[in-house]
Amino acid sequence: MSANTILFTADAFIAHPRPNIGEKPIVKRRLGARHQKVTFYPTTVSLSISKSFKGQRTNQVIGHWPDMSISAFEKLANARLSQIEQGFYNKASTILVGDFFIDYVLPMMEAHNRDIKSVKTRWRRLAGDIARRTLSDVSRIDITQILTQLALEVKGSTVNRHLSLLSRIFSTAVDLELLHRNPCKGIKKWPEANIRDRVLSDVELYHYIDKAIEIDSFHSKALLVSLFLGLRIGNAISIEKIMINNDFSLLSLPQTKNGRAYRIAINEPAKKLLIECAALSWNHWLFPSALKDNQHISAPKDCHAKIRDHVALASGCYEHVVIHDLRRTYASRQLQLTGDARLVQQNLFHQSVTTTERYAFHDNKQLTQASQDTALSLVSGHHHAFNLD
Image (tube, rainbow, N blue to C red):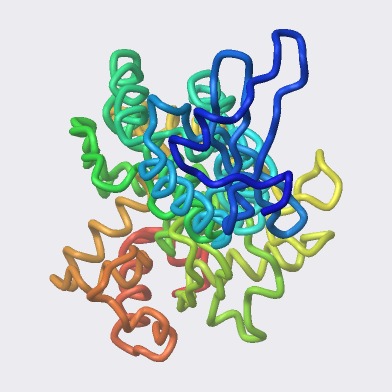
């Protein structure tokens, strides 16, 4: 036994000399277990571990003798050392949640074409409670408390979006082998009472399409494409020329809200609009921005508001209409025409374990015809504008 090692027994600890107050602590390694250490102070004896893993050294005090028995220390020390060797404990206990989100999660979400603006807004609301804590320090009860407090200020649907972001952060940590388990797992979603079922009537559709044709801009065309194909407006405005095949019969979306790629059959009304936009576009986007170089237009909220006001005056219906109601109108009309909820689900590329056929969407003649029939029904009275006479 060398001068730097010691047997981990009560007798050895009692017999070992203590440094005087003001003197340097005495550190000894455990005989036969070099990663376990004992440090003698004037009045206390601490038990700790010290290990290097992939260039990073971890030093941690596990407990103090005799409050913690030597056998209890040995169990905890071996568990912590095992975690370090697996790459879990060392990293998760040193990486802050805020740093992890900024350095890892946010870039991954940006690369996958997610709605980054809303993600950042949610993160700013959460950051004050969680950003300065380490990944391993956040438990399910911590997250539940954060969300419960948030529920006093916002709707249940908004709380669930924040839960989704937190789950994304910690599931990424699990995927990267920083954590064993996502602490969000098992947390129930908050009740949502804001289910929206607004669809446009035939009269409203007529005036909406009429005004959009009259405006004749990239913004109004994007709204009509959203209506005729049932696309989310974010997917519509970000269509690139390379996403459409040569005869404008197929649109390939590399990334959608649920993170998956889809192929969409282009019906005739949408085809006419897309061909027009492709001919007018000066960059690789079908709906180019005149304000930002090499960018697509932003969400056409002002254009939609202008059309919406016209529709209200012309139809006498003043019930509020948002852009996403165009997609809802497409879905409602297609369900009315086909009576096939699964077919509609495929056309809207909603995530579901039962709709595995969606990747072969462009080969399904029934789906293509359903999309065609839906759009033709929507443009009733405007066939001449889309060369459908």
